Amino acid sequence: MKKEEKNETKLISNSEEFYKLLESEEYFFVLFSNENCGYCKLAENNIHKVIDSFPEIQLYSLKLSDGAEVFNKFEIKSAPVSKLFIDGKAVYTGFGVRQPDDIYYQLKSFLKSGNSYFEDLAEK
Image (tube, rainbow, N blue to C red):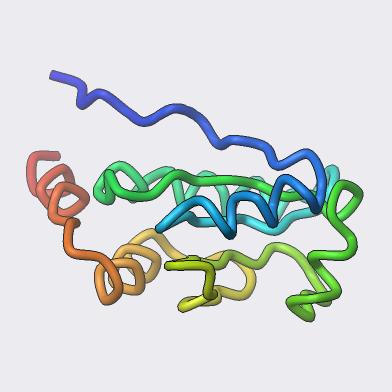
């Protein structure tokens, strides 16, 4: 039986939209990426392997071309970079392509949920 997965990554279309999320969402996870970046796609795939274990967060993506000001504010000099925001503050930053188990443990240290990733692995 296939587990129902969350919606796909939501795209942030500009800096203003990012700042609205920062003010309105208690939890959210952002992948800062670049157009046609193979590593960014790999990073997103790895995040999707664990994101369903954390129902309180949604994965967003912000491309450099859509939010250069945000990249500057958070001193993001390369892509991919992922950040977990809680109550408007970045509490976790992952540089480059992170392995799914690393992402899982990092998120679990900040969030209360999170067991299904390893339950799914055990079933396979």
